[in-house]
Image (cartoon, rainbow, N blue to C red):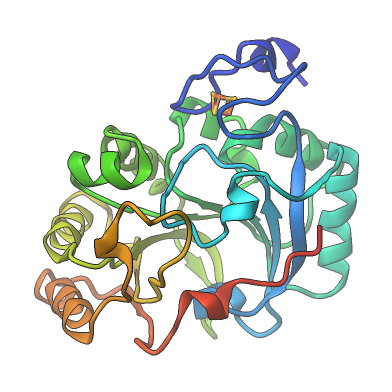
Length: 290
Ligand code: SF4
């Protein structure tokens, strides 16, 4: 591990400069901390496939989404500290259960530790990088050789919305640059539809944000290569600290989701995953172990 990177941490676009050898950064952690690892059945079908995705939930986050559905985990209010050696052992344990891949959830702020774990043990199944999208390209490059599938969010196009809900006015600029880098990963699928390599961009449709979703989809259609997939998510459920955002106190309507889906079709986006509207965010939150 390069201690210099951690003494004045600028690994993510927050660039808070924390000394993570002695304390925590704005992401809420110094080193590795996890809330759970297990075979997760609810990702896109080409990711969960038959036996589930070997998902590892990292605590802490470099985004501050008001509506976060994993609030205790993203704010690192819970979790278990582990070493890179222990993370490497978790890779092996999950792989031995027969999961389809290893999925790293919210890894942006702990990339050097994850790279150290891969140097100790590299699984023989695909590795998924599942991120909120607020990533620095130069930091992504530290892990890219180990990553097969990128699974980033693109949350908002508008700077006003990302500022209001994430506290990040530059969110789209940062995330779109990161996703452009991720889109270089070639698409590889098995004949029966399991993803081995590629890019799936997730977009969660939010209440009163249909216009912003349309702008996101236009960017997706114009800027990303044809092999990129789009996953349009309908599961928004009021969670987190949203007292000051009354507009977020309801799920999205059928009309809002259908309008966004129609936009995707109108733009000719065919590599598309849709979600049943009856899906609720609560169904996707696992019981935390640590
Ligand atoms: S990774 Fe954490 S400590 Fe480092 S710059 Fe980002 S928020 Fe700060």
